[in-house]
Length: 333
Length: 251
Ligand SMILES: [Fe+2]
Ligand SMILES: [Fe+2]
Image (tube, rainbow over all chains, first blue to last red; front, side):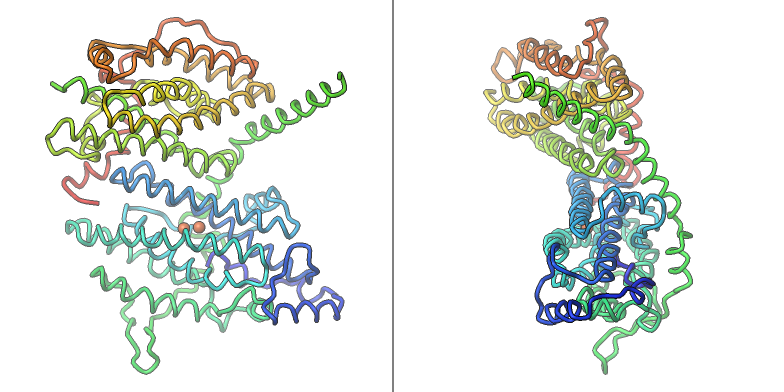
């Protein structure tokens, strides 16, 4: 998901020495579903894990502006153009809001941004795929925002207060995005044969990468145990993936689309949709930087950051001058 | 084209709003700080919203069944009537902000005045737009001051932007016979009456920004009668791509 960070091992987590009594009190509060707030005591590994997860989530929102932004100038109607512009703007707002939540844990936004630009921090693998047609904008709203919601609804009950509260607000907007995306798909599927084909082609390209958003299968996911105990994560990757598939398949069939998975079949015994094997080699390659757009996305972020350097410097210089002038005018009185 | 003056006038306002909104939307995701991505989004949405109301009204006036999208997506550059200023490329952040300042310092009092139009629809659009343009003016003025009075580099960039865009400011104050009749009927605003206020706003901002105000030399003109710079064709080739590639489709 936007928080695939939880699937990488935090090596320091096992070596840090914590005060066992403080840790026991902390765990008791979490078990009692109390919220942990910024000034509360927390284990260093909890702080690190959350910082990494929230920062990764923020980075995903920011990088996620690029593939959709790619179609703002080409949206096919003024209504769609306004909706897409507002959506991409929302994602930027989520990014800013999440950076602020992560800052409450003691890492500055500048540090987090530097980690993104240096490649040290990750963002969701899904944004390393290209948006090649207008239907991709529908697919991203319907499936990518849809998968994000599946992951983020439980995060509204995350043990860390600022993150949980951020998620409540973000989830409301994400579900609006999802409805808008589905509506784009609906219009395409009710449209001309060329539009319907555009919708199907987009689903064919995006379906498997979207399923990868939930991260590796539980059997290969190393980091779930402490995240579960700390109530940062409440469902496993496979549980969330299955929930998503079960919710999505009927929506796709309603559109008259075919999912690119011959193994997809409703299982009467389990009450869930069975699905085929996910290409985890592709997933690992995309996470490692070898997806179709990894280099492009990072180049775009770096270019924006570098081109904006003189603007940020100017704003700082101006703020300093103002302070000095204010100080001088007080001194002159 | 044999448009009525009211249709022609409404399209001028609509096209100017759309093209500037389109330009601002190009920034989203690429701004110097996230807060400016959000601000460009806000301003772009304001302008596209103004354009939509105005196109819908233009379609009604015309009475040939063209809706906002037919007017925005299916007219070629020669039929677009936006002022040249708004189609100028974004350039660097200073160029975009100065362009916004030069336009908003005009559009804010313009729409304020247009709220008194005898045309109820235009007056209603203007009431909303006036509030929006007040924010655009404040935001772009603050940034122009920051950049002008910031570092040597930002000062030089801001001054270059002012110098580059200045020749496009004269067109805002033009009033041809199409508009003259509407001004006399109490429908349109005579832009010449806003000149002093615009001069004052711009001079104050530039002086606080420690930027110098260029002389009013030869002014570029022609957008309002469909004679554009090379840039508009490229804007439209992007903006209209899907409607042109899939004629008749509903999106
Ligand atoms: Fe988001
Ligand atoms: Fe979203």
